[in-house]
Amino acid sequence: MTGMFARQKMRRVPPSLHTLKYGLESIEFLWIRGSGRRLRIEVNSDGRVRVFSPAGAALGQILPFVTGKAAWILRSREKVRHCVRLTWPSLPRAGDEYYWEGRLLRMEEVPGLRFSIRIEPERFLLVCPPAADSDRLARQAGLRVRAEAERLLRDRVRACLLTIPILTPGKARREGLASGLAPGLSSPQVSFRMMKRRWGSCGRDGRVVLNVRLAQLPAACADYVILHELCHLRHHHHGRAFVDLLARVVPDWKSRKKELEHFVMV
View 1 (cartoon, rainbow, N blue to C red):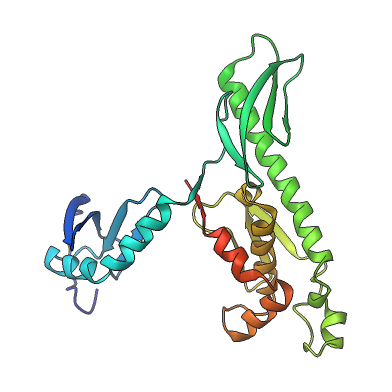
View 2: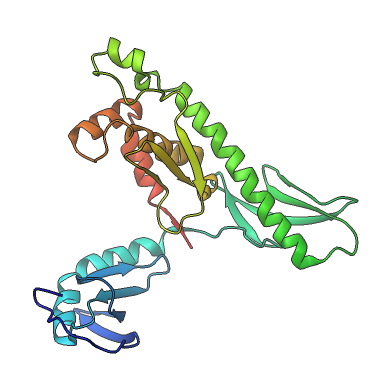
């Protein structure tokens, strides 16, 4: 390890809790050593602050670093207090509440001969056979919800592609956009994963990965993420060219992005 931290072998030190005064505010943070080559701070969706540092860092280096970031920490902490916290229904049970397409739905259970789950405008409806094992039903329900999320997102991807002819190679050539985003954009390779922090990604190989949890967002926010990643098929950066293309595809992208920031995954 180079720079301000000496290269040395150290036993792993468990995380430690510290408090720093900043004006009238107190910032409590968990210091985690031995994580990466540089100092970094993370404000979790529940408002808790974690500071990561190389193993050789000393508290005398950490405190000034946190002090320098204190204003940002307080803003971030205040922001998450007003965010909508999205819990994913991995093991849903009757009485639980989860967001779906921007609406908070309650999980309700009714008797039936065969297990099924329906997502209605105001509720998740679980149809449960008599004397069914509750743990097994919860696992089945979680799998069904995920399958429904992927079906919903596949439909959203198809809808997005239909509404953005500017991205197809022929239209792009007519409008002077060189060769368009990429050959075969009409059917890009899209997969779905459960991700903890990111809504989506686009690799340089043209593979688009979308977070299954996009199904919990309002349609405008989910579409913004999908269109954002599709634009990366042409520009693999967030520079001016990318922003110009995004603005043509999603003219109100700034307001959609702002709305998206009100949702946090927990």
